[in-house]
Length: 282
Image (cartoon, rainbow, N blue to C red; front, side):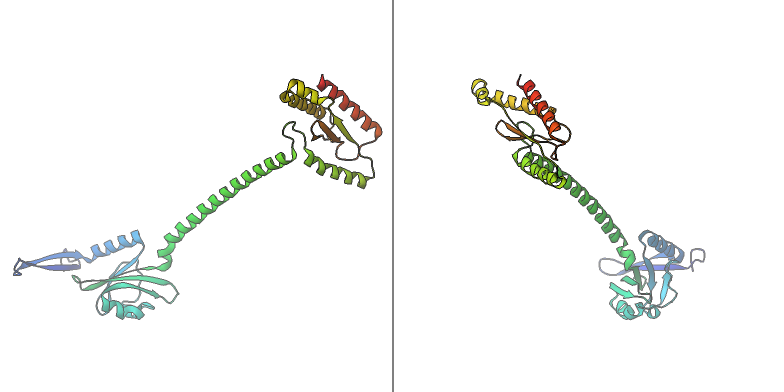
């Protein structure tokens, strides 16, 4: 006993000169309480169980949190199978499974100054907890990035798809539906007329002497005339009507892409278009 009768562990060192002659001895004393406090701090910090074992397998020193009820590793479930090898090899890494099915990762190191073995162990679940947490975080981040990329890609493709559809069905010069769009729309209008047993009104418009405009004032002025006529036609339409550029200076207008309400209404719409075209020409 030393240090106010506290149990103390002494570690003595032999001191020799260059020739190997004995000069003396130096001893260091560690109280058991100090060692246990150091073990407890290490376990709190790193989450591992630490204990010291002698050559007979007796657990001579452990922290209060280790929780080993047995006093000898030869009687601990799972550990007793590897105890002989751990004590014989003096150092190494081992793995064992306890009675509850938990896997323990064990590191053993022999300390010659104490003539004890240092056992440091941790369950596999605790050892992999940090890795799993990092993995889950990475998976969540990857999933979020994937969703963002998919959303952006979908929005971009959707925008370009709409743009391509618009280019495929719209006349670039006048902004009217082109011939391809007209072919699709007129078929739908004809089918609707057949189904409803009603007449269908289609108007064809042509700009007279348009070649003279191109020859006298140039194609840029001709393009402007086409745009003005297209604007006049669109301005005279009902919401149910549509107008498309057939080709060159010809335009067609299926009324509403649905059966017309009758001859009188069709004649009225035609007169309105003729009046608007005259205004555009002036």
